[in-house]
Length: 253
Image (cartoon, rainbow, N blue to C red; front, side, top):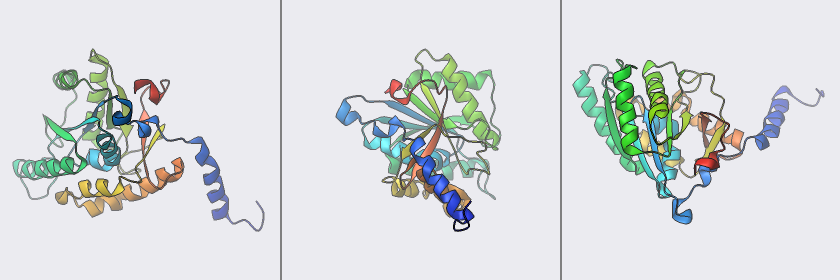
């Protein structure tokens, strides 16, 4: 290293050189209004606020382009408000989720498990499979299977198991939340430019008043958007890991 080059400058140059090798996903360019191809998109999350914080910008982008988008919450966040009973917390967080989905212009459903008590067994694999059979999605976003939160793990595993059992197969993409604290060892395969969707994503996330949305951003989500944007060469991006990376993203569109 030259004496005139600081360590910070060196790593900045190395970072910039790597950007060209990380293209945006073909998902970013999918537009049903132009191409006549309307996709059914499902996003599975353990709790209200997970889909919004992990891929709210991507969901808003899909919806704005004319695709059919639905969020499936595994639970209603029953254990997520200190001092509230499970029923009270569920009522509050259900309303917050409804408001957030309205802002993103997406539909929503609840699978019926309980926050902090989620299960992965034959009964719930069947319920998730039946849900996917009824919806017939083309692609599904779900949580990273080795997140630190057990409910995130359950959401991910149930989604994957359903994907093995449905007659109509769908492509799965994993999303990240609170990188380094909840989502660990996440190495993206795909990026979606959310530079124009950052504000709507933020508004949706701030519907979850009971969950301290400022704290959620302080957990690293705003930094994640900027960092993933740097990797993809845009102001802000959301990152995903594609299950079975042998298939190109365009093959399902």
